[in-house]
Length: 126
Image (cartoon, rainbow, N blue to C red; front, side):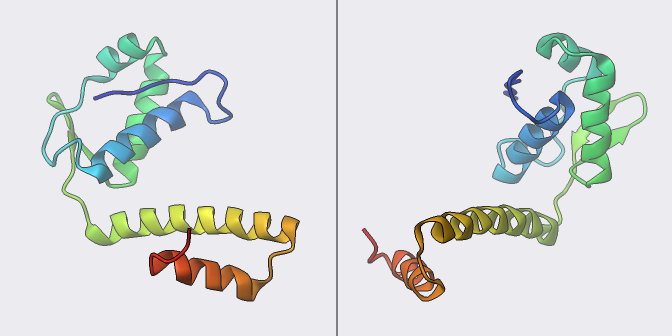
């Protein structure tokens, strides 16, 4: 498991940890049933407090990405395909919002924007 902390990021450290683990689970880099490092080990490796690491794991568990087994550790949970789809839809919507904002700045009409997307999807946009 590879996690990089960016101290200049606007995101809190626990959220950076959470998002990177979530991305590794969604991508399949971390497999269902795979044991995650202990909170203590993760905190030591990342040079963060155990409270920070625990918060990241607690939120991942609340979101259904990991299961905590008392005395054994944290494991990647079986994924609900709809949950993963929803995560990707949120990311797509965020990027589309950025595209809309950029298009407004340069005066691209909605019709032009739709045509650009259609052409891109069809592989004709260059």
